[in-house]
Image (cartoon, rainbow, N blue to C red; front, side, top):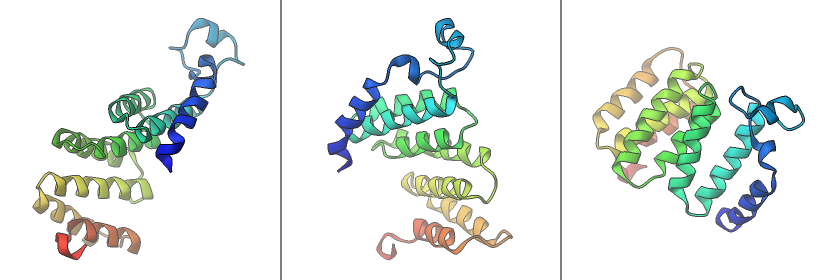
Length: 172
């Protein structure tokens, strides 16, 4: 369904005037910066770019989607959503280099997220999944054990997901 809707999403993004997609940052052009009606907040810029990146990925343009997520993350280095979007896009790549890049990105997400929050746990799960993909199961199991045994107790849903990520292939 998403693949079928991707052209519509790309058309929607293309229909928005370029000046409305730019963030209101000092790097914006003088014309945009001087016209408050022509600039949007960084959050709105990130939202438009995320819609475009998802549509690119859904239409089979994975490299273009990753490149756009990299721009979004670079423009908003403190945005957990931008960092997570990049990690998720990169981990869907089919190459070993993509998995290593995803592992590195998930580690950045965890470092910039409030400890033991949902995004932090998602980042830890992403790191565990990439370690398994990269044939570093022992390191993944150690990380899961550490997370489970460290107080306070982790929510059951995250414990289940983490344990499933390191379970032998027949027991998942």
